[in-house]
Image (cartoon, rainbow, N blue to C red):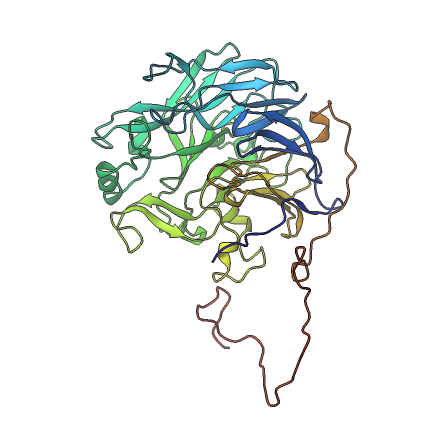
Amino acid sequence: MGHPTIYPTGATVYNPDKAWSGYTIYQAADLGALLIDMNGKEVHLWKGLRGFPNKILPGGYVLGSTAERDPKYSFQDEVDLVQVDWDGNIVWRFNKHEFIEDPGHEAGWMARAHHDYQREGNPVGYYAPGAEPKTTEGNTLILAHKNVHNPKISDKQLLDDSILEVDWEGNIVWEWNLNEHFDELGFDELAKNVLFRDPNARFFGNEAGDWMHINSASLLGSNRFYDQGDERFHPDNIIWDARESNIIAIIDKKTGSIVWKLGPDYSAPEVKHLGWIIGQHHAHLIPKGLSGEGNLLVFDNGGWAGYGAPNPSSTYGQKNALRDHSRVLEIDPITLEIVWQYTPTEAGFQAPLDSYRFYSPYISSAQRLPNGNTLITEGADGRIFEVTRSHELVWEYISPYSNQRNSNMVYRAYRVPYEWVPQLERPVEQAIEPLDVAKFRVPGAAETGTDSVVTVEGTVSYGEGALCVARFDEKPSE
């Protein structure tokens, strides 16, 4: 099951009548922070600015990082988090988390930031009515790394996740460290044994165990559950997800305690209907003012993650949950019912036979747009696309930029209104009709159609019959 070597890149589908039009920003591999319009025109590039991810703020400001710490001594550590203006000038920087003295490098302060951050004024980092992130003041929530030893978890060094809140001057005013809440995570004894023996050691830097790998953290923001009296959903509380453990959780900002959680086990009766959420990314509550406000939106990657009992795909019980397709889930966090989803079935593929055609086992994201559509980053293949509530594809873009390992991966993309970028005139929007791939040919290739045709007498067809593997919609006869 592979992909073609030749395929269109750039914008491939655009229905202006049904899409929510604006600018989209993403980190173009080995290039920088790239801003495109709905027709895929590259309207501005902050060359060299790293993005883990890039986020655009009102006024044409962009957040990102200037450098990565040397991988000889670290794993996915960004040196800083910076805000740059339209002309690339750094107008804000945070790096004073840890003083680093790596051999062969000048000693200095580093943020050790990774995966996510939120600027005050907006809980989730993407456009929501009435929730504009601040650009000249305000605090910033930042995910960061810290190396720790915790014998309760493992006798090996851990690469722990910290959530920091820093003020405009770069002072850390609040900090939360994941390893200090091990007893609240719900691991059974089998999982604890696996973790103790091997907390997901990564062979970079000091080979610390990347035991949880939090990849998103955001504020809950105003929501209907808190308005109805549920203190777990206080607007200042923080939701995060950890891909290695299949956990999504909310922490109480005041106490640091975990007050709501999904995972790591999805076999209990109250969550079994969800199926296993595996290796997920970008779990957040949909902000107020958008369709589905208050519901949990998450890119459920599939792939491999989790700790527990060994099985044929996991000899030692590490990464013991496996699924070879992705899902985007919108879940009511109180009833735990799936309100909306985008899976290979909604994408129009035979499931599970062709489910791999919607599949990103790492990175990726989902953003709810003001018209009710959802912008999805299927990151492994550099695909960003927009679908309606009824799952109609109304915009699609494939990144043409690849890294040194021939991957056009896109970690996470964001759509913002034209008005957030006053430096540019509103672009002309031109519809892009989907190609008929059965007829599309590269130069030099023959067209469809057969020169010579004969009919074989006595042949019979009854339409589609059984396939080698049962489809999800295969049902017993009445």
